[in-house]
Length: 424
Image 1 (cartoon, rainbow, N blue to C red):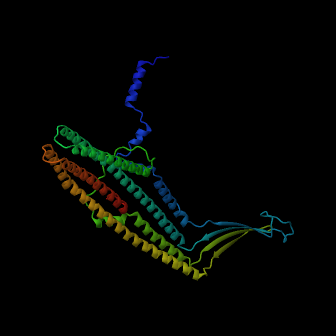
Image 2: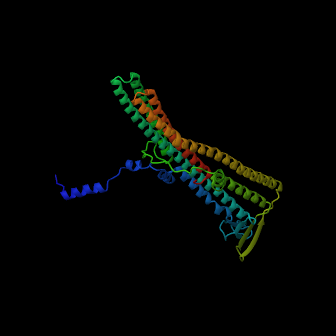
Image 3: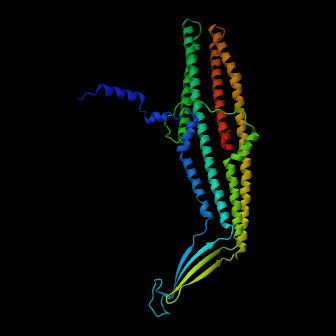
């Protein structure tokens, strides 16, 4: 076997040390630490967003054809193809019949129709774009909510894990005091029961964490069990949001409202197009006549359709008017629906903010002070074990409630951004 030179082996080890090969799983596991990278990944890879973007691009491509002139028509007419006038034989070849006519016809819609058709197509393309924007907001809101749930479960695991460590330490203290006859056996059994209860809570928290991770992966999209990095922090949110400013921002940026308003534009254009159908369309034709035994000559033709079916057109105009009124009513309904949802979500956001403030600055400090007092009293024999455990439970409940309130604030904030159509 050939020996590898020492210098080559040393260089190889240095390359591996400074340029390690990362496995795909390791690269994938880095995703999930921050919300911004998850949103960026979804914008690039989510098929729902890709489909909406392509639909919007397809709708924009309809604008130019809608306002273009109709294609011209070309006709070849073989006059006297039996050659009965000239006494020849039947033929289907141009120039071998009595007369050959070459005609080009260009349809010409009435003035203004093409412009209106382009405006209607533009409004419909705008609706498709607003639908794409709404899809982006929906996906981003779902990712923000799933990330918050994922962070919440991870935080619950930390809090309950710390409580478990504390109770286990208390359990060891109880066992020591029981061994010297200072406390009854019931305290030891209760400490063990509390430890088991917290371990059961951790099992349930792990289930919620996996559920949140699966939902988060589904929105990106990735396979449900794809690894995610531990979430680092929740996004910052404002302490207060003014309802009037929120309504103004939603009125200017909401894709839902914009889509309905563009529906009014499209319905207005359709009404104008139906009205223009009262007037005739035209066609201009140019014909080159080539007799078999004569000189070429030219004909000019003007064709006009006669809009006689006025009762049918009036019915179409009434239909277009009703559709316009319906589109305007949909705008009013969308505004009322949006304002109601904004008010409801903002109320929940403010309630969660107030709850978090009370928990963080009042209840949690009080619970911790109570736990410290209960520990000191228990060690000196002035309090029983039930008092100590209840104080520990109060701290645990307060910390979990604060985490839940902070998470709920972010969830409501994400919903408000989706409704408003812009960052807040």
